[in-house]
Image 1 (spheres, rainbow, N blue to C red):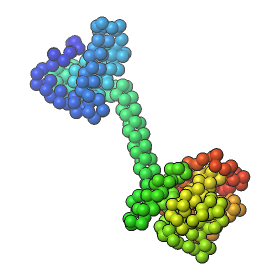
Image 2: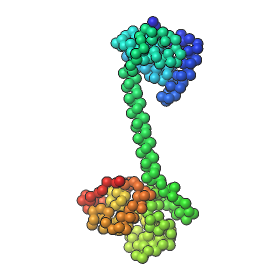
Image 3: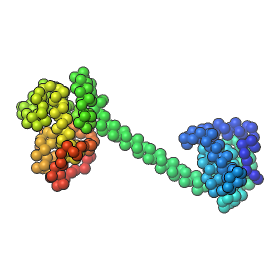
Image 4: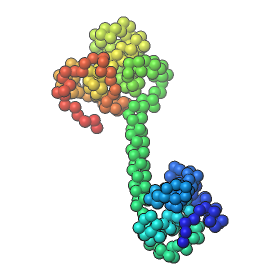
Length: 315
C-alpha cells in the first residue's frame, strides 16, 4: 500500500473525481486548483520531497483538500491512518476517507475498505473544520439578520414615500440631513408626524411649517421664514441635532422632547406620560425604530438630569 499522485488514478475514476472535486471545492468556497495545491504540498511534506518532512502538517493539508473533494487526498489520508503514518493507526478514520473516495468512483479506495473495514468515524481534523464552518455560517447568518434589521429600522421610510410632495420634501432632507448629522429616516418620521408634509401647516399653538417650529424654537435656531420648506427643515434639523447631543442619542427621549419640550422630559426623567407625546413617540418609532442615533457631543453638554433617568428597554 502506497500513497498516490494524480497520474495513478484510473481514467474513469479521474473523470468522476474531477467533477466531484469541483462541486465540493465550490461548496467550501475554494477552487479545485486550490484543493490540488494543498494535496501536492501535503504529498511533499509527507515524504520530505524538497522540504523538511512534517507529517502533522501534511495531514492538515490533506484534510483540507479532502474536505474540498480531492479524491487523491482522500485516498492518501486514508492510507496514512490505515498505516499509522505520522499519526496513530485508526481504521475507522481511514475508512472515513476511503469511503468518500470510493463514492467518487475510486477503485483503490474500494479495495482498501476491504482491509480496514466499513465502520467509519470522523477524524478530528474534519470535526474541527465542520465546527469552525458551522460557527462561520452562524456568524454570517447573524450578521445578515442584523443588517436586515438595521435596514428595516432605518430605511423603511423610503418605502413610504409615495407622493410628489413627499419626494420634493425628501429631496431637501436628503441634501441637508447629512450636514446636521441626522439620519434622513428620522427627519422623515418627524415631518410625517408633525405636518404630514404640508409646508404651510400651522397648529393651534402656532407651530409652523413642515417640522412645526413654534416661534421660540424658530428664533432659537434662527429661522426667519418658518413656512419656507428649506429654512424650516434647517431649523428642525438643528433642533434634532441639539436634542440628540442633549439626550446622548436616545431617540425616544429626543422625539419626546421635540414634541413636549426638553424640560418635560427632564421633569419626568423619561418620556412624559402625556398620551399625545407617547403616541407621538410610537408613530416616530414605527417608521424609524432605532433606539439610538449617533450624536455630536460638541453641540452641547448632555442633560445634567440624564444620569437619573429610568430608561425603559426598547421593545
